[in-house]
Amino acid sequence: MNDNIVVLTGGVGGAKLVDGLYRILPTGSLTAIVNTGDDFRHFGLPISPDLDTLLYTLSGKANVAQGWGREGESWTFMDAARSLGAEDWFNLGDGDLALHILRRAAFENGDTLSVVTSRFAAQWGVSLPILPMSDDAVETWVDSDEGPLSFQRYFVGRQCAPQVSAIRFRGAKQAKPAPGVVEAIEAASAIIIAPSNPWLSIDPILAIPQLREALTLRKVPLVAVSPLIEGKAVKGPTRKLMDELGIHPSNASIAEHYGDLLDGLLTHIGDDTPSYIYGAQTNTLMLTHEDRIRVARSSLELARKCKRG
Amino acid sequence: MNDNIVVLTGGVGGAKLVDGLYRILPTGSLTAIVNTGDDFRHFGLPISPDLDTLLYTLSGKANVAQGWGREGESWTFMDAARSLGAEDWFNLGDGDLALHILRRAAFENGDTLSVVTSRFAAQWGVSLPILPMSDDAVETWVDSDEGPLSFQRYFVGRQCAPQVSAIRFRGAKQAKPAPGVVEAIEAASAIIIAPSNPWLSIDPILAIPQLREALTLRKVPLVAVSPLIEGKAVKGPTRKLMDELGIHPSNASIAEHYGDLLDGLLTHIGDDTPSYIYGAQTNTLMLTHEDRIRVARSSLELARKCKRG
Image (tube, rainbow over all chains, first blue to last red; front, side, top):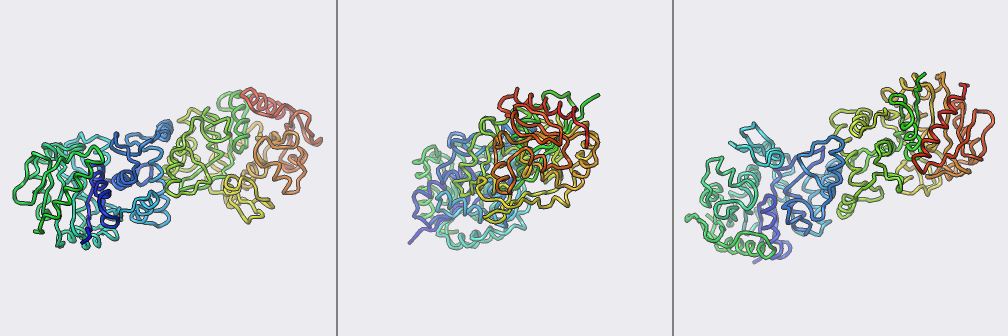
């Protein structure tokens, strides 16, 4: 039987797992459904950070050391923009601009985010379907001690410093899943949630009613890879956010958060594992390509072991 | 008596004269009115080649060796755009993108081309008013043996190879001069036409009815600096174009082209000079800053010598 794996993912950490899955699964047996709640416009250009990270990672163009953006990037645009008085809280690399400028031009031509993303992937030889969760605008906002902040203002502009009391996904209730998203879930042999931030990167995906419904109605296993290692996140504000939301930083909390959706949880060796779902452990730290493949393999094995419900 | 010089100009060659004038005239006594017939959108970004060349030249950022664009430019965007399948007949440097991206963002904010240009100039410490001829769209098109071509398709895309039979300025008849343009002409003590291509760079300016009317009604001298040296253009298609349009490549033809508007013509040493207008000669080749100042001085002296009509 052929695998038909669907992975729900955010940016950096999630992209590493997707890359591992992409390398070990036969062509045509993996689909990524990607968070677009972080998407925003900057200088009028449409930026899709998680989609772009997927594109960079899977085409081998990602700057691994930096954790975001392109390898071999240059910054002449930012210098020039700064000299013209432009705000510079969000760095746009010269090469990175190509995605945003061409995406904008394509939007003006009537193309959707799905269509543009698919074309970019094809140009870069990425054979995996990279589906935005929706072609409609969904915006992640945090309520914080500095007031409501859009995701990028919080994440990049304020470097996650504000205390978060709630997270909202503007437009999610009205958003339709992008073409192919529900179909991919319905055709899946297993669903994997990447080790992205459950509250900031995965919840926007789950907040789209028809998408969540398709997940709820599925008859196949759904497993998550925990973003926690020894109770901390490898990168990003997961742990800080859990503290601020009053959530114990444990794998049990991750499992509880996904609730009925979840059949299995892959955790880091030696970490706590909730007893009421299927579990497996591996070294979930992904520094090398081998690490990515190991975690991908473990998540697939766990999914095969799981039974739905 | 204070000078109040207005210069009508296109890009590269014209910008050198403007730079010379800018260096020798007291602050507040020079205004540039700039061709925007070459303006176009590329990847959805609004490009204003002549305005940008003025900005680069006057702020000391121009790439003098290359003849266009910025000094110290990088090309990462173009490489990335090419890898995404984008057309690459028009090169956009990484730093150059800042002008186009920020201009676009400003347009979306409701700013006009005049306002944006003025802001850019101020940011770069250029105290000269750089006025687009119009805030309305005027598009230079050539009728050629390859059919009608927009200016950039002809000039950059086809490197001026097609045979031109006519030149048109779409929208010119309906275009209003930008704020300050007519006022500057009315307040001028002299008007100078820079050594830009009369047919491609100056004619679009003269094609705007209210602007031309203000020039016609003026009571002050108008002198031009001939773009020809020994019957050839320093750069660009002036000579080739004159041949194709059946115009003898002489200063007499330049003078005849400007007709009643012209009171004086500054020409290169030893070249032909029409006898029926005021004339002066200097070495009009502008390679160095000293050259620019020399030609600027000569054009000012000629203007002072001229009488209107």
